[in-house]
Length: 300
Image 1 (cartoon, rainbow, N blue to C red):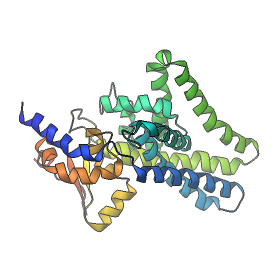
Image 2: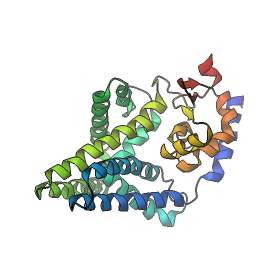
Image 3: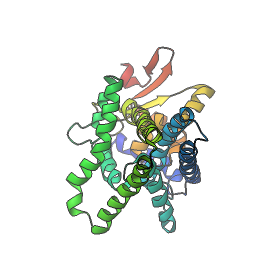
Image 4: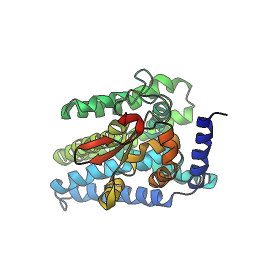
């Protein structure tokens, strides 16, 4: 057994105590996010809440909802508790409804991303690398990746998917579109476009930039431990920013242990930091000069 194999086993041993449990913080996050989204839209449509407030709120809720959908894809909301799988699925479907991305399709697309991270030919999220070009490029990349959820599913899964799964996809699409189209049909064009297009797009762009672009840049490494960065945010302000980032500045930990609840990423990173350094994992620290390499491999 090589030293690297031993290090992998040590990292897994550190991760195991955090996996397989019911992630109650994620459950609460999902419920609060969905209820807040419904309430915000209702208040905006009835004129109680100004669109100037509703749009940023819906953008934030769109951004937050992906964490719950993402955790559902990996089965990390209810862990090893088989009797609670319905809750894992329900929270995933509700959160994906906010995103207007069917969980059924996203599950397959996202697993392909994990298998082929940063591979231009195999990673369906690779278009996110275009986000660096311009703000309009970021918006186009967001739309391309959203459409890519469907394209990947229909190309790689649809023909062999069981009927039940195909029906689930169709129901998800209908559930996302019909209520929103009904709002537009009822004459709420300004409100509908502001909430379901503008706010959605802002949330998706921010989401992809923080969850996919910056943590995988420069998008040229495909090996385990090397394909995803860690961005350390020091001090009390860093702790707050880490929560606002929903711990995805430790996205490297997610790629190593996908079933780990998101709020445990930083804790595990602190435990296996030396192992990751030995593996050459890229680590950055936020300084007044921006992101600066912290790991020996990057500083060399």
